[in-house]
Length: 163
Image (cartoon, rainbow, N blue to C red; front, top):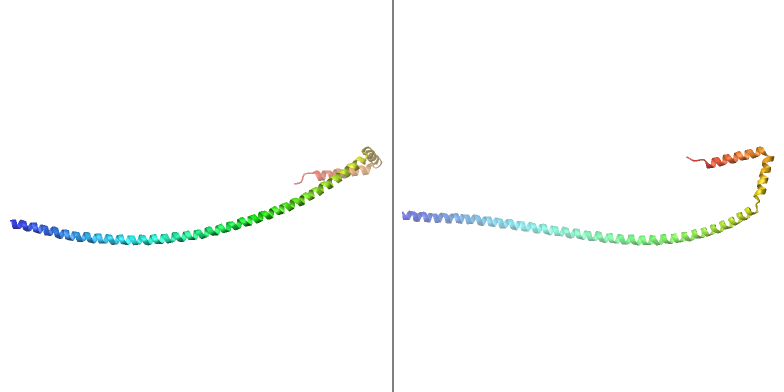
């Protein structure tokens, strides 16, 4: 019986050893496969990281080029705006000078004409002119009525509202 127990213990140990050995082999295989899968994942991540880094570098380079172009175009626009502003200022100064000259000439001419009109009005005797008009109306009543009608028509025509 002891032999049976010993055998059974030995058999049990052998069975455990075999099971352990095959279990260890299975564990080793699983660990090897896991290690291989992790290696593939690492390679894939490195490739992706490399590609992403390259794309990011390319995008940064393109952005830098575009920003340099934008900077150049803005500088050109600023320069052209400055030139345009200078030309506009010069033209405005010239126009102001011409307008000032014309204003002064017109003001002088207006003062002269006002002086002449004032002198002529001062020379006219309105009482005498009124008497002359009354005398003309008395001597030519028909013409006076026609003249008054024509003057009324003209004033009405000029002062009527337009559509």
